[in-house]
Structure formats: structure tokens, C-alpha cells
Length: 186
Image (cartoon, rainbow, N blue to C red; front, top):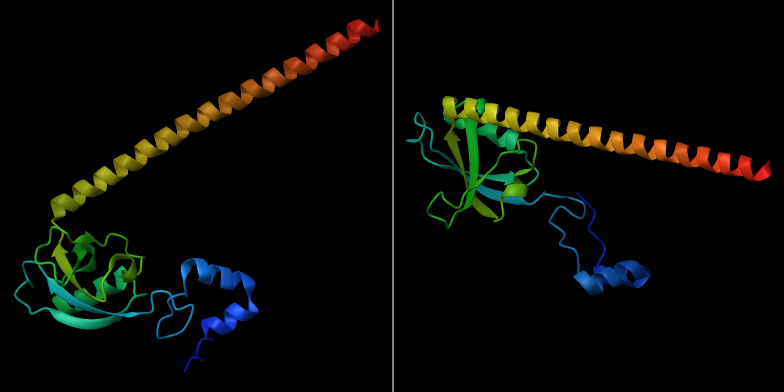
């Protein structure tokens, strides 16, 4: 069992900086598991499948820790709905929303689900990725990466040229100063 967090008033009396922060922002929100438990809140999630082979299955509700990664939820969906992780696309929406237009794509597998989930109760909808669309997205992502690399390379070359010009100008200034000093001393 975790020790209970000290009362905010006790800390405020002993730490002036904390007291100023509390005055400006209010007391920090501390979850049931104590301070420092980022994303530790338990979220009630209803997992639904929209994939062709498993859309007939009933939605499944689970309490999941907010710190659980999207990749782990995908593995859970793979076990429940028998769709390979690589062919899944997860979306999240509030339980009160009836349509999928407002659903948010959970595209980063390493992010915790609390990054995408904004309600304590929500739906996570699994859709099957069309292979042609997935290939096109991979090609588009690769093309964007190449364009970014080309732009960065061009910018780096321009910076290098500017540095060379600055160094050359500095050398000319030193030579001119040396010549001026030599001509005045002779």
C-alpha cells in the first residue's frame, strides 16, 4: 500500500515556492494511487470492432489503466477480435457520441491511452485497415520523409555556405587590419 500524500496545507506552510504555485494554479490533482502516478487513473473503456470478420461480436467493457499504451490495447483487441495488430486502426470517442466523425485516431502505438482518452468512460473502436490504403499511406509517409530530408539538407548546405562566407569575411578583415597596421608602422 502506498503512503498517503501529505496535505497541501502542510506543504504550503513549509515551502514558499509550493505555496505560490498553489495560490496561482490550485492544488495538484492527485489520483487514488498517490502523487507521481501519471496516467494511473483507471478508465472504463468499451472495445468495439468494426472489422468485417468480427463486427458481429458484442462490445466488451474493461477497466484499463490510463498509462497502458495503444500497442497493448491493440494486442488486447487482437486476442478479443482475432485481427492482427498490423491491420488494426484504433479510434476513441466519448460514449455519449453516436457517430464516428468526432472519433480521434490513436495513431501513436507508444503513447498511453490517457493521451487520447478525454473521458473516464469512452469507446475504443477498432477498424480494419485496407491493405491498398495502408500501402499508399506508407508510400506517402516515405515521400514526406524524403522531402523533409531534402529540405533539411538544403537548409544545412545554406547554413554551411553562410558560415564559410562569414569565415572568409573574417579572414579578409584580419588581413586588411594586418596590412593597415604594417603600413602605419613603416
